[in-house]
Length: 206
Image 1 (cartoon, rainbow, N blue to C red):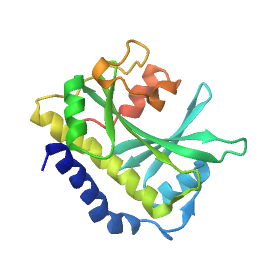
Image 2: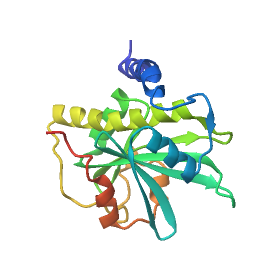
Image 3: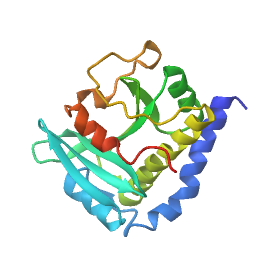
Image 4: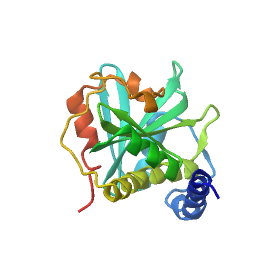
């Protein structure tokens, strides 16, 4: 089986195997949840995860702490009443990397995507939710996103990449051609110090 197909199969299996256990964290896992800050925060609190809402220059995100890993939820395509049609999930990883490394990670791990901003790693994915998402399903999405941070460090360790204190600054340079993809992260107006704060906790485990 080609390596890319093996990785895809492995990613699907992770979701299938983790599904029941993850869904047990929340009540009514099959109930639809709206993509808005109140519902998202309530789900995270019920799951026992710490939350922090951060706003800067008109952009607001909800940072969720899952077993020491920080996953960011940013509702997108919102109407005047705060109901949103999509949810952008991302994690900032304080690790310098090359486009070759991120592309190699993307081949082996699913379903998130690793891209580069100023040499730093952004692990992101987008959830379409025009008609809502299930509570259990979103719980799984968040836990898989947190696990992918550890997966990154396992992959980076195998390629001898270490953590770094270099700050995030998405305005310094364009993406390398190999990873030149559109990302909602490019629309985020947060300054570099705030991005560093969001990245804290996502370094390598001791």
